[in-house]
Structure formats: C-alpha cells, structure tokens
Amino acid sequence: MLPRHNYRRRLGGHAPPLRSPFLTSIPAVASQAVTSENNAVLAVHVRDLLQRGRSAAPLMAQAGTAQKHLFLQKTAEYLVAWRDSLAEVNRRDLIEAERAGRPQAMIDRLRLDMPRLQALAQAVLDVIALADPVGAITRGELRPNGIEVRRQRIPLGLIGIIYEARPNVTVDAAILALKAGNCVVLRGGSEAKHTNAALVDLLRQALAAADLPPDAVQAPAHLDHHVIDLLVSTTPGLDVVIPRGGTALIDAVNRSARVPVIQHYQGICHQFVEASADLAMAESLALNGKTQRPGVCNALECLLIDAAIAATAVPQLVAALHAAGVEVRGCAETVARANGLAIAATEDDFGFEFLDMICAVRVVAGLSGALDHIARYGSRHTEAIVTRDLEMARRFVAGIDASCVVVNASTRFNDGGSLGLGAEIGISTTKLHAYGPMGLEALTAERFVVYGQGQVRT
Image (cartoon, rainbow, N blue to C red):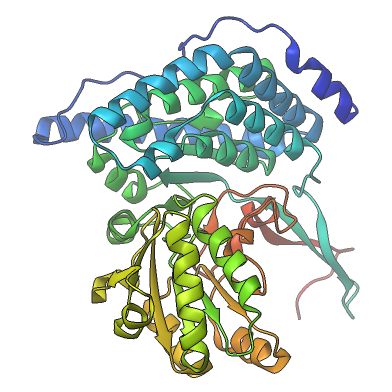
C-alpha cells in the first residue's frame, strides 16, 4: 500500500472524459402502467443483474487489500478529475427536483456540488486508511481433542442497497461494501437518477482500472418500484438487503423480501431535557441537532421537556428554535408557555420524521414520561438526554432501546465517522446482525475454521 499522502497527491491527475459504457439498457416502462409483458422484461433484467453480481462475488472475496486500495484510489481520482461533469449531471437532478416542487431539505440532500465532491473524494481516501477486515481471525482456541478452532471474517456476499435522495450514498455504500470484499446492487431514488447513473459508471470504471470485475457494482437500468420487489424476492440473488428511507420504502421491502433485511429506518430522534439540565447546554444541543442539517436521519425531530422545569425551559428553548427559523409544533402546555411562538401539534406530529426546519415539542412527566413517549414514538435510531444527574443519565441509557443513546451531546453524533468507524453504509435500526452505524466489520460475517491432525468425532 502506498503512503496515504501519495494518494492525496495523485488526486489532481487527469482522467478520461466521463462516459457510460457499462450501464445496461432495457426498454422504458411507464411506472404508472406496468404490463405483464413489461414485468417479464424487468424480471429477466433483474435475474441477469443478480447473476452477474453473484458471479463477481467470489472474485471480490479473494481480492487482496492492495488491489481494493487501487480501486479506491482510482475512485477518488475520478471524482476530482470529473468533478465538473459530475456537478453538471447533478444540476439536472436539482432542476428537475425544483420543477417538481420538492422540499428544500430534499434538494439539499440531492446536491453534489464542488465542495461535496471534494469531501466525497476525501472520504474514499479515508477508507483506504481503515483496516481490511476480510480474513481477520477474531478468536482462536485449542480444544481438548487437539483441534484448533478459529473464527474468521468473510464478506457477506452480494448486498442490495435501496435508498432515496442522497447520491453520495452511491459512493459511500459501494466503497465500504467492496473494501469488505462484497459486491453491491445499488437502487437509488428516481430523484437522483442522473447523478446516480454517472457515479455507478465511475465506480465500474475504477473497478476495471484496478483489474477487478465491474459487475461488483451494478444498478438496475429502470427505477420502477416493481424492480425493488424483484430484487429482494428473486432467488438465488442477494445475500442481504439494506433499505434506507422512510416507512413506505421499509414496509415495501419487508413485504417482498425473501432475503435477510437490515433496516436503516427513519430517524425519529428525541432530546429529553431533564429537570437538572443546564438550559444553555440544552439550547445549544437542540439547535445543533435540529438546524445544522435538518434533512438527515440523525437530526432532532422532537424535544421533550421535564414538567418540573417547563415554566423556564419551554419559553427559552422555543424562543431559541423560533429565532433560528424552526417552526415549533407543541403540546397544549408548550403552546401555553411559548409566548405565541409555537403552534398546536397534532398527534401525527409526534413520531414524524420532518426532515425539515420543524420540531415537535412536548412537556413530559419526568424521566418516566420521556421513556414512555420514546417507547411509543421512537424509531430506535438516536435518543438523547441533557442532565446533570448521573443517576438519571444511567436510568435513561438503561431504559432506552435505540441504536445510539447520547448523554449531554447532540443527536448528530450517531454517524460512522463521528463514532470512530471512519465511514458507514447506513445506521441499522434492527439488531441482527448490526445495531447502529455499520462500518467495515458490520459488512462481514464470522465463520469457523477448524484445523486438525486427523481427529474424528466419537
């Protein structure tokens, strides 16, 4: 492996013009009028795509670290060398999103401008610095009968990733999956179709440049929702599927899947301001959680305030959110104490992922009230408490079922980079086999390897 600074230096190199030799073309099918004939065409396309991915999987599983790092190096080089073309392609998606009246938060998630492309290239280089988990022996023991039992990390195989809106996921997911020796089928949302197609093309060219199979990264040529059903139900096919998105997407995958599903469910993230909390800290954390990037899954969606401090905390925190441009939707007590800066929330506002400059606020009866609310409305993503009482913090952590529980810090820290994984493919809100941000190790499985000297079972 070359020193990391050599990879950085080569980012300025030249690359060939952006081209699209790899994308498979199938007849266009109107999503509003899918016929049985077109369904048959889609089924053939998906079976072929999955077969090519399964054929590439053994080659990726056997690829050495240096070869995978060459792929990552080429990916980073192309992202920089082709940044003008990629930004222009991305503008097509942005224009179409604006014409369709998409929310500004979604348009922000779609944006892949020059600074974000540069950051994406750096994220690729950062993955080079992470340890390759494939082949690692995690445990070993000598049994009384003389056999040596080891546990070894191996790739999961062919991973399907179904996601919405954010084209950076195309690169983030692929580079992590491939470094862990897997192959991927990427089904992004139609709102980012131009950008995603260009990025998949770029990744396939980088694989070819590293003498790795381009079919290790694939994307369906058509984005009809029926393709999702086919991807997750066709067997043999995917080894696992990771859906990232809202309730409708997750439910659709769960209904159709005949393969294991690792859910990256919506982020209905709460911050509970306990009676002993430092209100200045609570204000700072709420503003960071809600306003830094309101359109991401670890953004704050609901602020819970202990009834014991509501008279002081509600006016202060609501005023701070309102001044930052956040629409506050509060319970009856919140509205009564908010000096006209909050509107009445509906029941649907609690347990809703706004992904926008909107925050629900509710006054609750202490820790038990907060735990009850989160148990009813939470999505097992990220839950936070602000408190100066260590015992309250311990009880909150013990009482919460979420992939990340935060004490006196922002919900925004539930992120692979922030938590020391270097990068993530998603945040699992299910417990099999990962819970929370999924880095390289979570994209492998452990198998048993046994060494003997002729022992037989008696």
